[in-house]
Image (tube, rainbow over all chains, first blue to last red; front, top):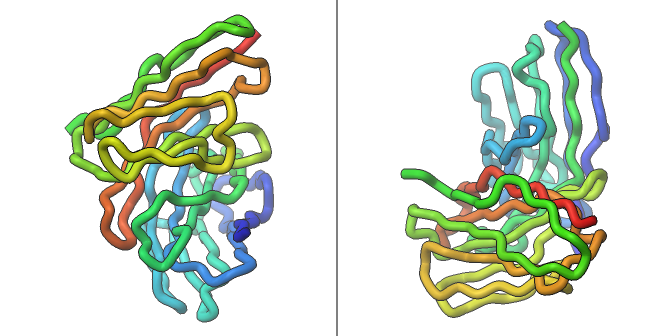
Length: 113
Length: 113
């Protein structure tokens, strides 16, 4: 079965620093979704990537899907305390892209002011 | 739109008790899913539904029942609670079209003593 591995599991950075979170799959990713979860709350959708080489940005967060569609990275520029939380990557189970998602184990980000 | 709503937000049960976690969405989404989130294990799929009257098992279905009598509601029943079911439960919904966002509820934090 396909699994998503996220690295690192946790990350502590000083405010203003850049950081990258990785999400790696053993098989081709059909749709890759990044979510953010604040402690004790639900999941907030950040971005969805579908095509190999695709890159999307929103404010200071950039997500990329590699050409082989087996790895995605999430990059935060000039981190702020508001970026703190758990980042989860999720993926479509099949090519239809219209089923439920399966998820990685998450990366816990702490930003020190 | 209220999006995906869940009740209760917190619940404490004794071993052997039963209860129902409520989930509702007002976006006319066909797909609805229940996940549980445990430390270090990410989100795991319990049950899902592709439409009213249709349900299926996910990765960790044992000890849980679901039904889908309407498009809007997708309750999760714990038949006889066990300490291993202590977790945070998330309900999610999605349109049955390719590559679109899966929306999540705020979660229910369940403790079984």
